[in-house]
Length: 558
Image 1 (tube, rainbow, N blue to C red):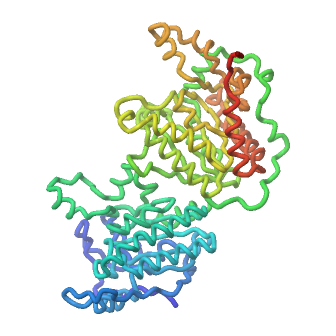
Image 2 (cartoon, rainbow, N blue to C red):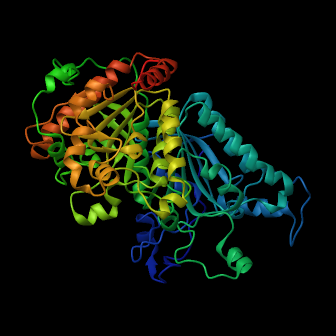
Image 3 (tube, one colour):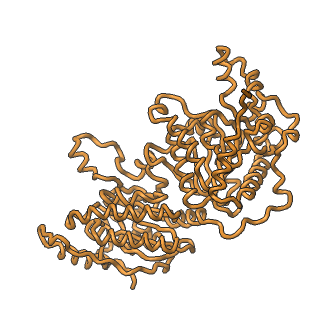
């Protein structure tokens, strides 16, 4: 069978509900129903939605699920009449159609909702279709893509409609447990019991630009609270700022993004390729090979140089693709930490790091790399996603520490850091961490509980900044240089103490003097470490990580 859109309208013109422009309909169709005047994204039916998401001609629908009338419900007309009218209008049996397709040539299970069918409401048929789509994806171990448009539960089916929330949530949870990627594309509108169940349980949440998303609708909230709602309330952009979404994309960007996401999260098949000659000798593991070099406080100055490559500089130079994901799904997105799946020398990895900047504007926007609790929660969320998908984790550390202040404390800074430490220790995938600049205190360690902990030659790593140490012990920061020596913050000293496992060479004068050389060395070091860890099982990796940190410390006999 094929999925066909309903018959086209007889008029050649459409009125944009957002800007009131009168748009020539063929032009609107060509733009995939995005207003050429204001960019408003018109709602799409199932067939048009599929056309925006999957490769042309690739969708093979599964048998559609047909709803029934369990309650004998009648309002102004019997429920069966409403169902039949919706079927004639949309060409669908109910508000969801699912099947298999390809996106960027990769096989997926795809399910799309049609708001024109009784507001995309979820009754027994919708719950069954979504659950069957989940079960198909699980049986094939194939990524699941869900495109959602719904007003919520279907009142005409009473308590049975409510139960579909649990039914679909269970099905999504089963995919998560088996490491099958799920991506939910939230479109306008997504509300009610659908939002509060399968729609927000995807590994990755992508919203179409301008979509309204929430539990209760804005009119219901305004009437219940009698409060003025914030500007942009419940829009995709509003929710993105509050950490609830990974991405907000225009309609024509959805398919390319999904194709990239599928590519960078696909597990590598077969054995890892052999390293080029000399590639497994980039790391310096003997402190004797690090003689000479600048004094500790001068090293700290090099590590803090704003010309030094940032995490995003390294990522985009080392990786052939990177899909940044956002938000902690609780509070907000913290730009001081960036992360997402990437392709490193053809190998999918999850790469996460502190992000500073090269100028005042970016430094301020990213809080100088000082992460708030939501930054660490985002990092842990991405690490757990990597663990489910079987992707190695690579972290790049460059921060003076975690963000101080009332806002950070109010939102649980200590709790967020401790959960990162514990969560990293339990990952079943290889973890490689590199201190690329300044590794300060628990804010740095929160991203560095790894199987391999490396440092760049002119990076530093310390329990506290030398200036803060001087202030606490001497009453002012003037003794910073002396404290830098006393704290043993440089790579040779930390390698000798066993705090780090290897040191990555830097060009003379530091990575900032030849970023290309620094990138080449860092990439080689990370790949070398991943090759060394590639043969270990999940249990062995956890044990290795536990024993690595268990052995650190010096205690007095007796």
